[in-house]
Length: 464
Image (cartoon, rainbow, N blue to C red; front, side, top):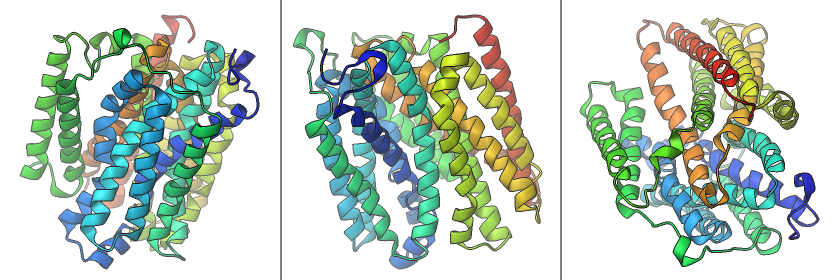
């Protein structure tokens, strides 16, 4: 038994601190997506940006991050988790430092893009090291139940902190967080994380460069088209052009993956019923997170006239509920099973979204927004915890990079696809607030249907 292995997943000093460090790094990757969300108008004013340049800056991190996760997972499985973790953190920290010091828009844009590339290397590698820390499957399952809530917490904290911190200091200080976390992660890699153990050449998976190119280009183009639909409308060439090209490339990717010897994404990997349920849960929970952040951001600031600081403070109960339920998540999953936990999360989340669907121009914060936020946060935390366990169900150690890449891709694509669909629903109503209420109600119906689906699946198999 190595120094980082222990019965029941309890780690010996100093490696008992390794899991919290990895969790903080994972949360920071998602935190960095939301890092410039609220101060974006200030950045646009400082650099005198057009709407198209603002859009590019908004997606510069998320597109390479989501597009390269599958390839990042393959690199983890081929070259060892800690190696890719260190490489990714070095790039992430340097890109964050240069972004903080950027004097031109082009520099900031390039560094946000490089941050996304680095994040795609780090995320699958971090999950691979979690598997090494907990070789016992039961202990690994408990770790994943906690891990599931880490990402959404990072997104919410990024949203809250950007609103509060940039109200008193320059937006550039937000980049201090990824810089500091990169340094902590590198220190942990040198002292407490599992050593790099590259696989023998005969068992190394191939790189599949064609698959990586098709998947990355397809995800980036399709995602850009969906994001552009928020402002340009579905009939705009800048929407349907990239979207059609992206979908075509993804279909070609799936076609070629069935015909090569060592595919980047083995088709059978997504055919596991429990794993598919977990990935769908990840997508829908992440979509709910972005939906509530965007709608309340616009509603509170543009409709109600709240300041960015007040808006950020209004999300504190949401964050507290996420943290509180996440502390209980491992116990809930162990007691009731991952699928039942996921189904319960969807039911609670549906109740929260339905409550928020009562939104109107002068909705009372204490009567409508607060209880809806708390219910949704509790439900999302359970969904993420149960879905994370399901997503890793029966994954062999040599495919942990693949599993990490797929799970993180689901978390990234969920908000892009789900949010675009729900904003299309909102656009069918004449009033902005009425449209948001309809989008929240539609999301509640989707969560309720997902709860029923999860319960049906749970009855047909043993508890994960």
